[in-house]
Image 1 (cartoon, rainbow, N blue to C red):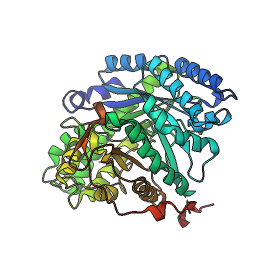
Image 2 (cartoon, helix red, strand yellow):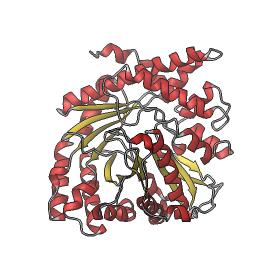
Image 3 (cartoon, rainbow, N blue to C red):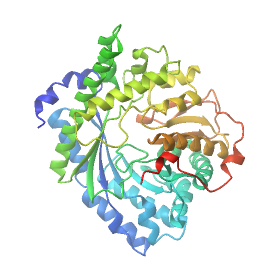
Image 4 (tube, rainbow, N blue to C red):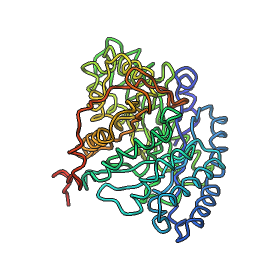
Length: 454
C-alpha cells in the first residue's frame, strides 16, 4: 500500500534534483469510432476523446497541487489510426482529415500531445496503412500536437523493407514540408521495431489493440536524481554503484506508482503501467549523459560508454521492477541527443558519433532518438539507418526506434532548435556511402531463427 510518507521521502529529489513525473498518458480505444463515412469517423473520434479525457488535465494539476509532484505533460494515445480509418479512407487526404480531428480534440481537452496517428506494418502494408504513411508529410505539417509512429519490424515477423524504403522518402518529405521550422515535423515521427502497446512517451505512443477501452499509463523521469545519488559513489566499486542506482530507481518509481494510482482513482480509468525510463531534458543537471560520465567516462562516446549504459539500464529496471507490479512501455534510459545537455555537448565536440549511438542502442531503451542530420541526406540513407536499427531490435528481441531529423537547408556544424523539452541539437555527420541497392530490393527480411518458438 502506498502512502504519503513515501512522497515526503522524495521531497529533496523533487525540490533540488529535478525529479518529475514526465507524463500522465491516457490511452483511448477508437475502434468503436469506425464507420464507412469519414466525416462520421472524425465526429466520433472528436466526441469520444473529448468525453473520456475531459478531466485528464485538471486531474493532473490537482495531483500536482495535492502531492507537490511536478507532472510535466498530460498526453493521450489512441488506437493506431490506420485501423480506425481503414473502413472509410480512400485517399491520403481522408487520413489527413482524421489527423485534424485528433488535433482539435486534443486541444479541446488541453493535453500537450496526442499519439497514435500510426500504422503497424511489420510484415506487410495494407492499402489503408500505405495511405496513412503517405499522408504523413501533410498530416504532421498541418497539425500541431499530433504524433505518429510506424512499426516496420518485429522479432516474430522480420522487417518490412517495402515500408522501410518508403519511410526514407516520407521522412525527407516531412522535413521539407516543415522546413521553415528546422524540419520540426520529423520530431513528431518515429519508426519502430517491436513497438510496445502501452508506451506513454511520444512520439511513439499509441493505444495497442490488446488494451481495454481506456487506461492510464505514467512515465517517470529522474536522471538528475540518479546523478546526485552517484556523488556518494565516487571511488566506490561496481557493487556499491549498482546498489545506489537500484535504490534510487526504486524511489523514483514509487512516486510514479502513487501518481498513477491517484490518477486512475480520480478519473475512474484503469491503471495500466509505469514506464521506468530515465527521460532527460536540455536543462543542466537533468542528463542521462551526466550519469554516464559520473559512472566513469570523461565524455559520452568514449570507450566504456556502452558498458556503462548497459549497467545503468539494468539497474534502473531492477530497482523499478520492485517498486511496481505493472512495469511496461520502454523502461530504461533514453538517449535523445537534442534533449540531453551532456549528449548535445558530446555530439558537438565529435566525441559522440551516430555509429557510437547505434552501438549504445543495443543496450538502452529505444534507439537513435532526436538526432539532427544534414538536410541533404538521401532517402536511401535514412532507410538504411531505419533498417540497421530495426535489425538490432529484431535480433535482440527488444524495442528499437529511429527519430532522425534531416534539417532542411542545414549541414554539419550548424544547429537545429526545436524548443521546450525537445531542445536543440548540432547537425551530426552521416555516412553518405550509398545503400540504395540494398533498401530498394523490396520484400521482407525474414525473422531470425530464434523467433520460432511455437
